[in-house]
Amino acid sequence: MRALTRSVAVALCAVALAGCGIRPTSVPVDAGSAPTRARCGSEDPPAAPRKDGSAQVDVFLVCGPKVSPVRRGVRPPAGSAATVRAYLERELLAQLLREPGPRESTDGYDTDVARIALSAPRAGDPPRAVRFDRDPEELSKQGLAQLVCTFAALDDGTRAVLGTRAQLREYDCTRAVQDDPLRVLEGSREYRVSH
Image (tube, rainbow, N blue to C red; front, side, top):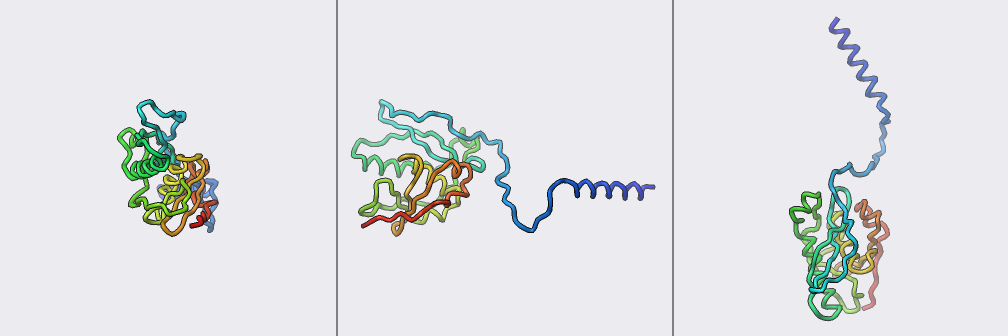
C-alpha cells in the first residue's frame, strides 16, 4: 500500500510540475532583473545655489537593478567657469569612487565605479568632455551608467561626453538607461573633436 501511495504522490508531483505554465526553450531568455526591496530614488527637487557658496549636485549610485540620483553637497571654489567645472569633475568622480554613507547603504545604494582617474583635457575639447586614464567602457555597465548620468547631470542631464586621451564617446542618460544600466551603450557614438 505504501508503494502505491508513494507512486501516486510522485505521479501527482510530476503532473503538477509539468503544468506550471513555463515552457522549456533552447533559446536564452532575458527576463530582466529580480525584484528588489531597496528604497531608491531621489524625489528631491533640484536645489538652488546656497548663500554660503555651496551647491547640490546629483551623484548616480547603483540601487538594485537601477542607477538613481543621490543629492550631495559640494563647495565649488570661486573662479572662472572652467575652474569650477574642473573642481566639480574631480569632486564628482571622488564621490563615485567613495563607498556610500551609512544611510545610503541602508537604503540599498552602492557604487560600481572603481580604479579610474581623470586625465587632462586636450586642446579643442568641448567644456563638457571628461577624459579618464582608462576607457570608461572597461567598467561594469552599472559603473559606466553611473559615470554617464553623473557627468550628464552637470550639463543638461541627458548626455555625457567621456573617453580617454585618445578618443571620446557621447553617451545618453535616458530613463531607460537609469532603469536598466545594461543599456548604457545603446546609442553611444564616437565624438569627434578637431584638434
